[in-house]
Image (cartoon, rainbow, N blue to C red; front, top):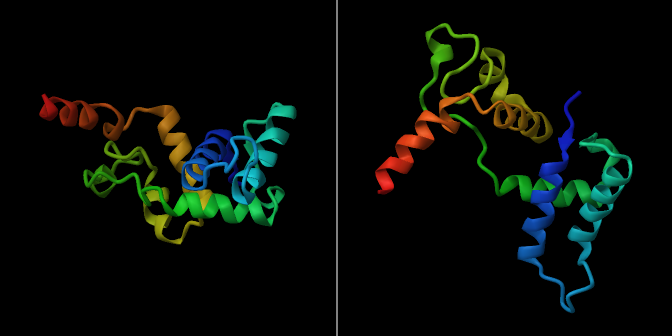
Length: 137
């Protein structure tokens, strides 16, 4: 079962802190507070992941709104799975993940994003990124 990684909770908290800053520097507004409660439980439990069902309605809604602000797909239009590779050299997803992506829910998609980011072997994280950086100079 896919889980939400603590780095996604952190990113969602930062999204909401920027979007709805604390009015007094201390008080957390509702979306940030809901996510912070999940984050605090994770830290207390030494957990790196949480099941979406365990987050509660307010935290899930806040996380989903953050999720809507992120790129939908890791695809960089270099799909080697269409050439028979089991793992795409461009984005790092498996053939099955590429095929099922349109029907995956947000938690499944973020779980995949987390895996390919940690692996960091796809061209989107190295060769493609290096080429993009070279073009800026």
